[in-house]
Image 1 (cartoon, rainbow over the protein chains, first blue to last red):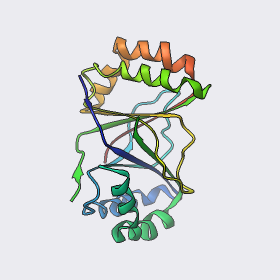
Image 2 (image 1 turned 90 degrees about the horizontal axis):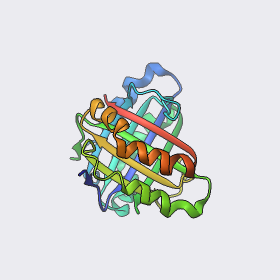
Image 3 (image 1 turned 60 degrees about the horizontal axis):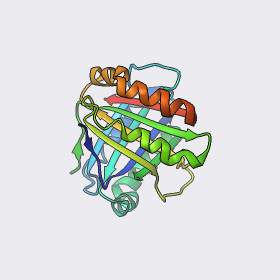
Image 4 (image 1 turned 180 degrees about the vertical axis):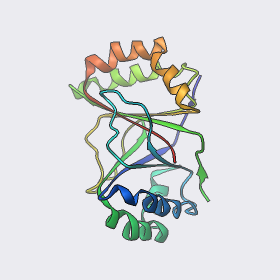
Length: 105
Length: 105
């Protein structure tokens, strides 16, 4: 039996770079988010080797954040460290950013 | 300091229904996946109330699964319970299914 993530706000961001050579720099930026205490769990990733029709492998970097509540996610949005990441890394480096926020049913 | 999800295979699926009236039925199908032991953590969700330009709120249901390894995810794919879910729920009910699989950098 798998463990169910109850009371979890899922914040998943996928990043598409202007220039794939900037991947390390974007990841360096994502690493700066680690000290933000509002975040419960953090996963910085890249596309896996899986490759089927339904799989989107087009993004360059994935950031999955789990929060204890919608309020913690709101607090993260305005945390100065996150704002700095958005201004210094995400906006200049990325052609496209897509966020999908999900709450438990 | 947030907790870092190391050695984690992130499998995130977003579902778009043919008919929004089938949401409860799709969720019933997702619940059948819970006994699959290959899954480490499972989150069944719907779009949060957040609404900014970068946010995709178009999907109907989200399934986030965390696995201990790519191999566990492969085993999940061919697990009869998962195959039955795909045939009985996902394929007939969904207009679109997008999977994003990510591994740690």
